[in-house]
Image (cartoon, rainbow, N blue to C red; front, side, top):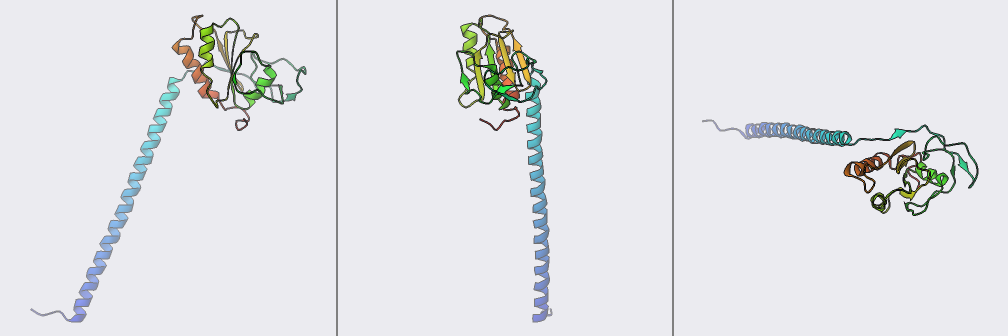
Length: 205
């Protein structure tokens, strides 16, 4: 058996090294493709899951609100006269420069101030004086710290409960005069979820 010369040994090792490097590169390329495919599957699966959940949530929400034509965003002085609003309560139009502080009120606030709140993305929940103490308590429970929600009594309401957002209005009388049922509570929550912070100036306080 002939022994390899030093040169032949060198060439053989060189070839083996090249083969090893080629295999390593191929494996690295395969690894990158595998990682890319896994990432695509994970992202795609996440998008599918999120879309499906969103569709399921949307399907579970029944919005009773009607869209009210926008009457503009003109400022007026306190006590100044203005044209009639196109809904009761109003959802847009002439309003004071100062808005009301979010929270629960026991006395009625001026519509012109609250419209400015709607412009900032607030939800305005009002109730007629005939609302029962339990209904009022249930309505007030929708206010949470930091939420853009105002709850107040309002003598002009033509329904016991009115839900207003910028350009949207829902109002109804509870099926039971004593309290709101689960469907009615969900109706209010769905309105809040759909329209809170959707006014023309959502970044305003």
